[in-house]
Image 1 (cartoon, rainbow, N blue to C red):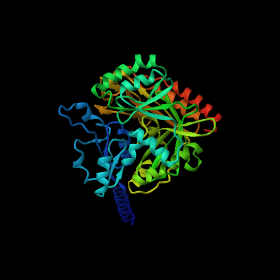
Image 2: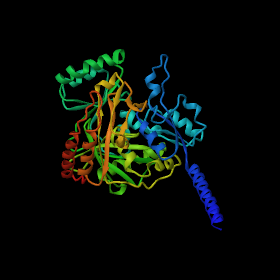
Image 3: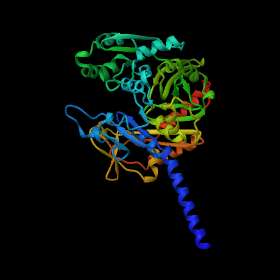
Image 4: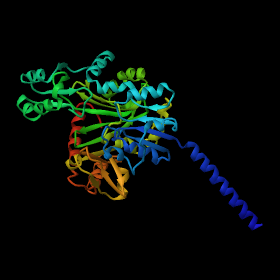
Length: 436
């Protein structure tokens, strides 16, 4: 009898394991990600939940370079040809911009797609974006458009404290602060003329006034104009650090929520299913001016935190592909991080070394893993982010500072002191009615 009981228990156990395996396979989904090399960590995060992920970065050229073809290698399942996989997966994801034509085509053909779609133009076409702000009833700072670099130079000789922006081509210039003409001429305008070449007087520049105040921002997800139950808002010191707080969406500070709510009609019309972030300048009167929308995963630090601070972030992406809203489950109240840069990485392979236990808290950009070592791929000075989550500002800042000390690489800037600047901005924000 004992032998029989043992036999049947073994049979029951095998049946249980079989059922659990079938259930796991049933829940397992296949993802195809089209990227430009900055969102490898999203692919890794999805794969960590047991899903099958195929990751593509365009590498083809008349004279292809190997470096583009190895981004993500060793971190995720890297593929060479995107269209070979579109009929082999459940979901197709675009976590960056400049892809609305491909994403729209795939959606029209019946594929389930996560992407900004045409809503990405709110970020990429800044002139049109400001027009949309006015149409939906958002406050809009004083702006003007100047065509051509020569005309811009003449204008900047007469003014100070302006913000200069260029549509689409972030690689040519990011948003740039004009303080006075002597500084601008010496440090920027001459080089810009060289970069633009014969197109220097064809491009249009957006010129905006400065707005006195503090600049928090929203970080979350939008699905067909609807926002998820939880979200993050925080402060960023450019190139220095970020601290964010998790709140129910309905408790988002009103100036931030107003921007989102009025923009929702644009997301509804474009049926955007994407990560979404804002930078909003808030005055002492409590008025919020949208400075820049980010219609993609907010990189480097806020997006890195979002991947770890929500237990079910991958399910949220899956549901968004289906047009469904997810009740996010936060694991902590606060997140913080710093982006680490190295000038060496601009033109050279950079080995980044750290204890294996830190892997979850280090999010790479344009990287690969070869022979058990992590490398930043040449061509980008922004190497990785070091992040932490916790239940107080003090805890997350302490953890980030501790972890940064354990990361090393040639000419890698591991100064986390910028988080102290963010803390000062948080204190200032309270005087403007933004509780944190």
